[in-house]
Length: 440
Image 1 (cartoon, rainbow, N blue to C red):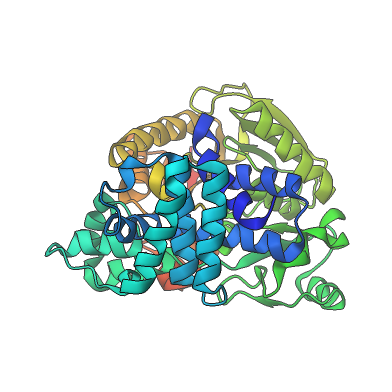
Image 2: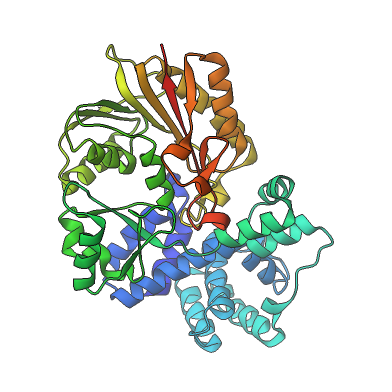
């Protein structure tokens, strides 16, 4: 397979059987036999189409008499890939993008689509349709098309943030997130890891807000470096690293992580504990539990056990010093890296998820020792899933109080005592966390 074919197969198969694009892309790249540069191109093409899909369809619809809906899923993605190269990738000549799209149409489209693909893409180039302004008379709809976000989400952010704030967030969501790693403190420190990476020709610098978060400038070879296989670091966004700082785990603690997969926050907590004590990692998926074990084995962590169970009803007799809940959420704070979330999540999902989150919190309350702590976090920016859930929980569980997050993370990341990050304000994923202490 060549890069464009990998991208086409990923885009056309992602979403079937619940598969996420990154899972499909990883599998396709592994089977492709592509060089590192071609793998990078396949990734860029896939990500680019997902980020700009609504805008790509808007441009294409203007050159298709019967619109995109007249085409099969595969044919739509062939045209999207062609237009993305023409409009967004200066290093690829337009004629090459057209020719490669026609070649894909010959293999994956109906016979009638071969000529159509050539004609439509050349029409766009000739009339510069990809440079035409969007002007429907409805500002929310225009922004939705321009930045390829669902209309309901754009309307929500315009109401919450105003136009300047909404546009800044939309723009930030369409930028590629920097690759960030966390040193495994059981094996190395920040400065030592940076020196070791430099010896491998990999440059990393400290994040502005979270000094342990190392942002890698040339991450292409990072996963193949021996430092990864030897467990010297873990891939983790600064927002997730900030959440882990609220845990404040100590050696000897009994810790429960109710929504543990893939194990990033749990691993950081075990490192805080010096791998002394016990962490019980719970997840609903056996497959995801195996991923936790794989990650912990690579990191050299041993003081843990795994249980497959539903966090909303999980029960055990003992109480814990610390309970972590990285709650199932809409994921709308992580649109920079979870590129298909914007097309999966619907507005009614937010209310459904907030009910589940409150149910998990209510169950967790009875598992915390007096004097112990409960850390609740999400990777979303919706008030209903964040502050709203915590306020409802505290009203029903008065033995808990909020501990100010400003004691653990920079004040720029604190809002009314909660940890709160935004892509357009802090250059990291949008996330939320609250540290709650049980007093009796």
